[in-house]
Amino acid sequence: MAFSSPSTSSQHWNAAVYAANAHFVPALGQPVLDLLQPRSDERILDLGCGDGALTEKLVALGAQVVGIDNSPDMIAAALQRGIDASVMDARALVFENEFDAVFSNAALHWIKDDPDAPIACVFRALRIGGRFVGELGGHACVGAITVALVATLERRGVKDAASRIPWYFPTAEDYEIRLRRAGFVPQSVQLIPRPTPLPTGMRGWLDTFANPFSAALPCEERCGFLDEVTALLKPILCDADGNWTADYTRLRFAAIKP
Ligand code: BEZ
Image (tube, rainbow, N blue to C red):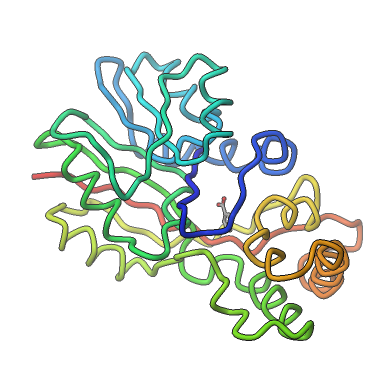
């Protein structure tokens, strides 16, 4: 797993809440690790390492791994795992020509304001021949959840609620163009539907990821707001046994610095 929280988003990261409600994010990171094919002699940057749950797997494979994330709370959790991790903005990386690979899982969709900036930084950080391998939310990811959040905020009188959407969910075509424009040679860029079971239900997911929306409301209204969004989504994303599944899509890619 891994992610970052740019300062432009009002998303607030809490390592304990994340571990309770979103441990499935790193747990589902195996396919992108498989695409990376890390080797034990490699130096790898984990961009948006979060609490280091997935970074730890790279370390276990013998790679020399550095993690960065711009949430101090998540970096504190990564350091507790013994990971070499620091707080850094993915749009302003300080590394140059020094990594064999840059890996990123579930982080890049939080950088909505300038998705090209982390790509350019990664290009600079890699040695020639280095790989950029990652996964982020893809086009239409959490579409039903987003519609419910925006509609419920607007019903409560918040104007232009759509402007609060904090995520960038590109199509494969969009991301491939950005990679090429930065100088990369893409090897694969794939949009993958991945309906995702939510271990603590929709309310756990909203408590973890929907603070950019609830922040529009006074504190005393937020609980009712999230309950209303949950009720709206129940007929669509919850089965008869009470199991919730989020409407995720993933954008998985691998590219080389030539
Ligand atoms: C994720 O962690 O993959 C994610 C977070 C928020 C919205 C969609 C996906």
